[in-house]
Length: 121
Image (cartoon, one colour):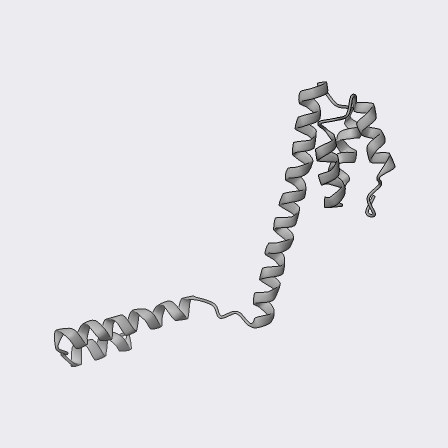
């Protein structure tokens, strides 16, 4: 039999103390379920979240570039799609995103990528 049940059967508390006691028991049970994180684990989790946000922003910008180019020029060459999706440099992606408005052709856009290679590519 659970210790809590034994204590509950053996003693009768006034209603306000019984309520307080049950609250403390519930709080204790919740604390046992929730894992405690060390400072290192917490910083690692925050870093992981930041990396995830950066990746999401990069992917979103790549998709916007592709959609804008497709809207303006129709179907894009597969090698250009691959090149855009391989760009890791956010400043280059932001620059290219703005340039999708002013380029006159897909070829001109491809030249912009060649003229501004990112450090990772």
